[in-house]
Image 1 (tube, rainbow, N blue to C red):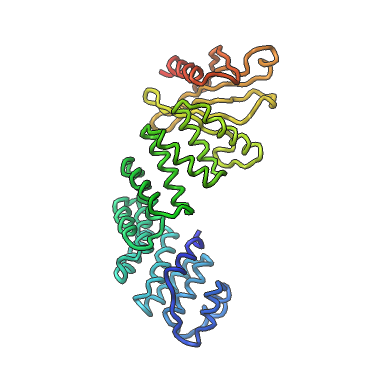
Image 2: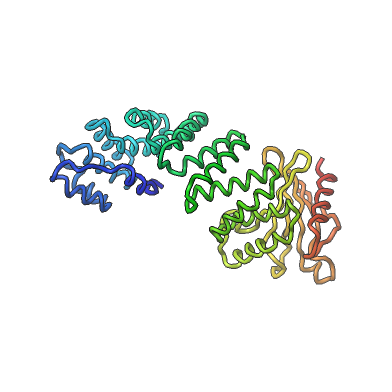
Amino acid sequence: MKKIILSLVLAIYSLVTYSQNQDSLDFLYENREYDKIIELYANKKEDYSSNALYQIGFAYYMKEDDPNCIKWMDLSIQKDPQQVAAYFIKASTLNYMKRYTDAIETFQSSLKNNPNDPQCLIGLGESYYQSKNLEMALQSYKKAIEQPNCPSRAFSMIGQIYSDLNDHDKALEAYYFAKSKVLKDTESYTNALFNIGLLESLKGNHAKAEPAFLEIIDMNPSDYHAYSKLIQVYYRLKEYDKAKPYKDKLYDAYKKGLLTDNLKDMFCFDQFKWNNYTVLVFERYENESKNAIYNKHIFYVQDHEGTIVFRVQTEFSRVSLELGGTKYMLCANLGDAHINSGLGFNDDFDYEVLKTQAINMMEKHLK
């Protein structure tokens, strides 16, 4: 995880060579020979420059040896209190160690020397965010995006914090702003698009959510989570024919073993509010080639705490099909009880009819 910021650190903090004796260390540092740096320089008792001390500490940083990294960064800072890079690496390591109070203090010390350093402002924001001080984190990220060449993470985090504060209007505004500022080939741009789609959907603006998910898929055709969200958009718009090609893509990816996480077994294709509950509707990839009974379409009814209190599902049974019956029976589960509605559906079912009958079962059995 730490290595992700290596190129960023190297680009932002250029270090100066102080003497000919350090040429070898500089060469090893520039060529990322961190094991060699530790082997040849860490145990020598020499009067190293602040720059050399930093380079040795950075080698330990890249080896994820946190105590030694902090030790050498402290030595570098003692030698030169203006060594911004040493403050940054030390504070980032403290963040990694979850010592957020110490990290905040270190970032603040660095900012005394360079109050507009966007990297340190982002690091400080991360310390505040991880320690649940969202207001101070927001303040730090907002100051960071005012600086030239601010990394894109700060833009994303502003939207994230507003979402955490349940201020969805400001979160949406922040993500639109991030989309306009960060480069298209960055993770932050995709993150902004995805959250724009989610928040517009949450506000009921499904037509505005559609282009966000379409753009993600256009940039990355293997972003299958965006497929699922786009399918939900079309179901909320009752444009079921538009959803079908994206369902087919998910089924194809399933057959090729490309799906992971919560998409590996099924995908959510609709969600809606019913009374004081949230209903999430899933479709499983299993088909009639399997002999066992299985659930194909599942309506999970969740309370305000996210607990599933009732479930309605279509159940496939080969026996029913072979006897000339419908392919699926609409059933439900309430606790240990299994309820059969007596209603059957085939593959060409009308989703609005299925949804209505599922809601009827909720009204009948969930008091």
